[in-house]
Length: 257
Image 1 (spheres, rainbow, N blue to C red):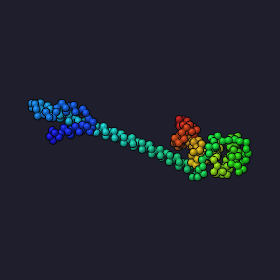
Image 2 (spheres, rainbow, N blue to C red; image 1 turned 90 degrees about the horizontal axis):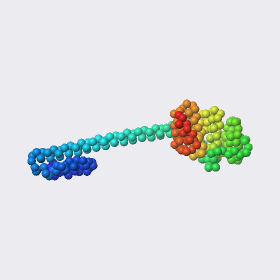
Image 3 (cartoon, rainbow, N blue to C red; image 1 turned 90 degrees about the vertical axis):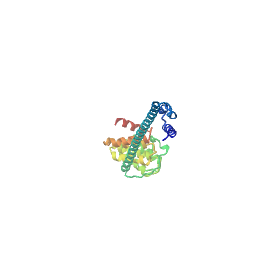
């Protein structure tokens, strides 16, 4: 390669990789002046050019090695992120499979409670009879009155079940299901309680009681020694219902695990 072609090629390489250091070295021995001066001077000039060229190649090789290392690090991070994402997806799949198994695939109506359903059940002085009167609000209040003011869990369970069956599309369904699960839990029937809480989570996910019902499922699993499942549920409650009552309870349990 003659001198007139070598210099533009070398400068292009310098611009391509952003290496500025060798330019000064090459400038010290301009190629156009190689033919002038003594033999020793010409050899010295060629040696400087050769050294600058070697330095450039070394820097290029180092940059390539650094780039390859960065690529390897990025590839490792991508693989780690993919693994973590797969773990999250698998955890969520397991949770919802557990919910399905808890409620036996029960497909209760999916109407969410209206805002008037509230988070705290009303306690009007209505009849506490477990039979339906045809008045949805009165029957709900009667059932909740038993829940709050009586230790008769069996009677409360009968009243809540009657309400749930009598008013399948009621805006109070999610509340009634939650309190039914709570009655089963207080009676010590934890499997039935978990199944009932699962109905709230699965069929009324936007209900004001959904986060607490989800938390209760985790609590039951923890009490049964299934700490890994409980932890996964607590984490899901915090993620799915941030700043909710259930999320705050779940965070306390996570801190204690």
